[in-house]
Length: 251
Ligand SMILES: [Zn+2]
Image 1 (spheres, rainbow, N blue to C red):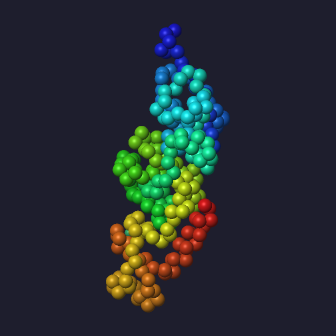
Image 2 (image 1 turned 180 degrees about the vertical axis):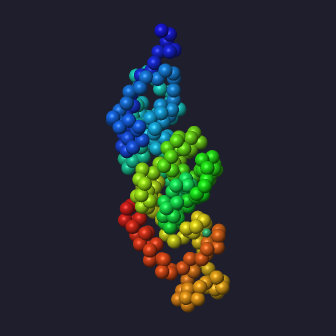
Image 3 (image 1 turned 90 degrees about the vertical axis):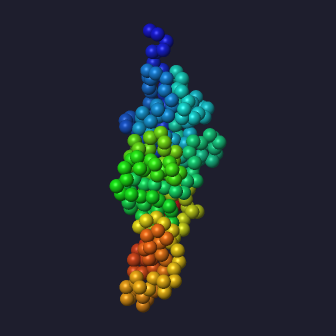
C-alpha cells in the first residue's frame, strides 16, 4: 500500500451542548479514518456541527484554527461558546461575542419580533432565499440566526447561531446569552414591523393619522424612521411590556 492512500485516524470529542448537532447519538467521542488530508473545519462539519458554533479547537491539547490539516492519530477536542471562555484558552477562541446586528431566516418571525421589541437590530424577510441571507450577513457584518445547520456551514458565514429550541421565548433567551446582549437592551426603541429606530414625534405632527380615542387619551408618540408606523402606550402596550419582562427574566 502506498503511503499517500493510508487512512489517517483521528478521534474527535465534542464538548458542551455540541452533541445537539451530532447525527449519531451514540456518544460525544467519535473515531474516524480519513482517506485524504482534510482541514479540521471539514472534519468537524462532516459530523453536522457548523463552524460558527465552534469556539475552541484543541489538537492534542494545543489550540488550533479551522484551517489546520488533520494529522494521523490526532486527538481533537471541540468546544462550543460557553461561559468558561474567559478562563480556558481565552486568547484562542474562534468566535466573537460582541455582535449586535442580526439577520434571521424566514422561519424565525417571532424571534425577530422579540429581538426588535428589545431594541436589537434584526433583519428579516419571510421569503428571503439562502443566498440573500448570506449576503445580508456578510455585507452587514451580521450574525446569521437560523435552524438550518447547512446554511451556517457555508464558508462565508463569519458569525452565526443555530437555535436549539423551537419556542420563540427560549430562542430569544438563547440569542441574548450567546451574544452577551443583556446590557444592550433598549426596549421600545425599534420598529417591530421594519427594524428601523423609533423617534419621538410631536402629537400635532401625527394628529391626522390617529383614531379619535387615541387622540383623546394619549399625548406621547414615537414614529418609525423607516416605515412611518406610529407607536404609543395604548392597550396593546401592557402586553408588550409583559413580554419584555418575561424575556428579561430568562437572562
Ligand atoms: Zn417601521
